[in-house]
Amino acid sequence: MIKGEIVELPPDVQEVLATWTLKTALMCQIMQPQEPPNLPAELFTDLYRDRSPADEMKVFCGYIMPPQYLNGPSPVEHRSIPSRRRDRTEDGREYELWATVVTIRIGYAVLQLMSAGPKGLRYEIGLGDFSPHVELLWPVREAFSWPPRALRNVSDFNILADPLSRVRRPVPE
Figure 1: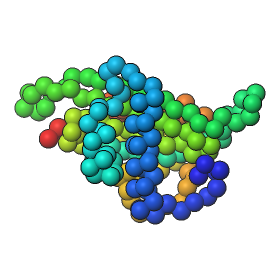
Figure 2 (figure 1 turned 45 degrees about the vertical axis):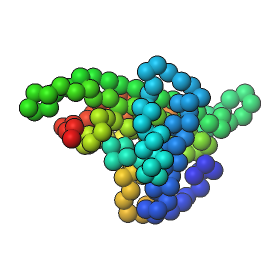
Figure 3 (figure 1 turned 90 degrees about the vertical axis):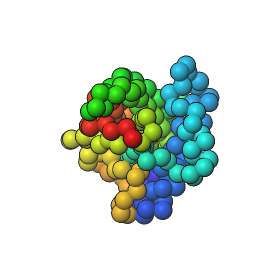
């Protein structure tokens, strides 16, 4: 994927790649700390315990040509965008809804983790016309071939930059 070659991604490989994406997002958070943290500290414990992303997470993959700089192509890019808001359940209980989108590009591969909470949150993401440009890695599904249709640039992933604007019917447990 890093070299831009066509690969088959069966369910077990999707899980490994999604888990690696979460681990890498958490490591990037340590290297570039923010207050409050973009991803809650409990995700470290959850990853260690479960060895896979949480049910509240989505991981997508895409394909993009690496940007060219004076010294050649940029091998790696990372960005993390947090979002928070207060919401109410149907019975009137108030809770904090949060989401973070972490985008990691290595070579031709673009991986994007969407983590949302509180724990137990179930949500759908409306991708609309964006769907030919990404494949869902987590939760895993049937095998598929990568890459999808190429993105023009990493900012094409901005459709997911504020996931709370796209969350439909959040339901905290």
